Image 1 (tube, rainbow, N blue to C red):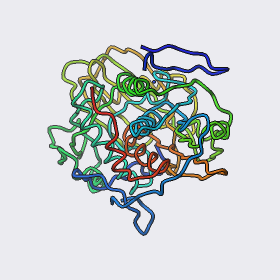
Image 2: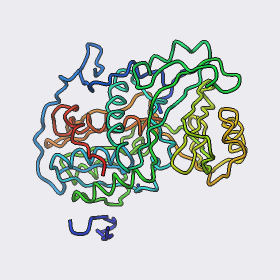
Image 3: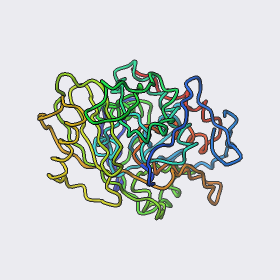
Length: 392
């Protein structure tokens, strides 16, 4: 249960009693999966890869809030929960809460798409996979799913990102859609964003957190109110951080009632501008999609809807002639590379940036949150990851 309390021009939500990067060949970035542990280490090239990455702890002056997180999508909520779990007093400022965030519109299956740099993506995605594996045991909207990626014959050797994932193997001919030459099978997770984001938000509020609806004109507003700010504003980060490298990639999806026989995720990236996927959830299926670089319109396009339905029916005949529930459009917050770094401002104030996750916001969420927490207040990201909330 929550009450809404007006605070000046903002609206606070409090508990009572105590919501991909651009390159020519997107996403072949993950490297081999490491199931035993998640590791952070700075290699000579600057990438993160073993568990000796320990950002120096910082001493924060006391101001209005101990830690202020900007953004209430999956990046902001995950980061806020880790910091709260360590005993910090955390407030979220956001222009929108679930279910009115970009994260809510995502097809949301674990699959590193349109995101770089490769070595760091590997670490963040591995960490998130471990977290989703644990969360799938509860009723929080994380669903284990067998997954198939369709490949061209020439791309057989490019699927090394999935080697080592549970269930990884080459797809059999009888598993491939008509006309497909190759593919891989692996175990992944589908995240039902309406349930999962509501659970994250509920856990944060139950832990004493506050969410304030507030649209910022610039990040200095936040740094004037808090000694430590963690910036997770997604596409809005481009304006707030004055970062011209941030750009939208439009994605349109069709949500349909789940027909019998659809049980696995199927994805086809053979045409990078027309990624096609079938993502079964509990009672519906998300059909997609589009990859429209630089397009910021969020109005559904009927011709695009028809094209998505046709491509998905070719990929999985079970979804031919579906019952359409709704058509949605989201804007992926893309950047040539994820920005996850710390700024030390005047007066000992700290600002951590955690944005530019492209089409992999869910996939990288817990890994990036753990590193953002370490950059904010010090410590080992692997230890921060263990502070994540468990299911239930």
